[in-house]
Image (cartoon, rainbow, N blue to C red; front, side, top):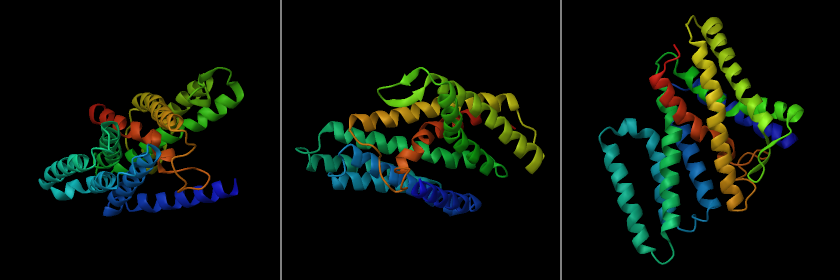
Length: 269
């Protein structure tokens, strides 16, 4: 528990520093490193790291994607080059690199890069309030677990997905969903009334909060399913007591693009 608390505290400090520098390239670098870490852990879990050249190309491409706004028209050529080189390595390793492994690497790279870059897209939606939208998105991915934990502890009777995540209950899921909606309203009140003078659509905030809980659970269970299928406990140990990057950001993978889409069509202010 002591190690878990210490590593969690260190992660919080790093996150605060990154968010304080959100208007600089530091945010892009942070997202790039998260993408690289998540891809490496996914490749390692699925036995793809032994195909070094292909894995390297995918991770390198993932690292580059947050900086596409700086590349301009050249970003399309980078993507084309990545695709061509990746399939070229498959021709070289065709006896060992079967299509299922190649598909895992390609799909993982596209999913992780697109999802995590959604955070940058959310940040750029508002020059003044982009940081709030990013923090709100991360809250939507992570804080539902708190409500789910207490609801499941006191009222949990019915298992939600016992073969994938034995500790999750239907009651915990319902409690976490409602809690997340309330957290979004509280965040809106704090930011819109105390920190700034910004009118908020609190009904949308409540709906978004509950929806993020559902979407985040889907991401969590999907990542857990991969761990069950490949018989691993955690994706990594970069945060002692918490697991790897994928263990911490599996919900964000689904919540970030969801919030990017919803905020684009249904502005909350």
